[in-house]
Image 1 (cartoon, one colour):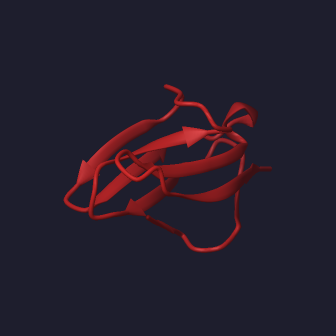
Image 2 (image 1 turned 120 degrees about the vertical axis):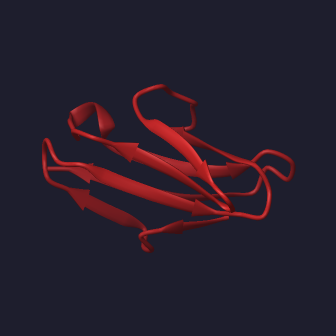
Length: 82
């Protein structure tokens, strides 16, 4: 799977929106700090699964991973909230 924006990290201003996209040919799910969580909205659009946080806070900081259900392959990005 491929996450955009690209890069090992993303810095987001406090109280702003951020969106992560994960492109994969198979079904994927998002993890934060290695766990599935409900602190964000997740939506599938074709081959892209979108993670959206409307108002970033300290609880949203951490490592986000997009994992393929069948293969277990994953990609990750670290989100900093400032």
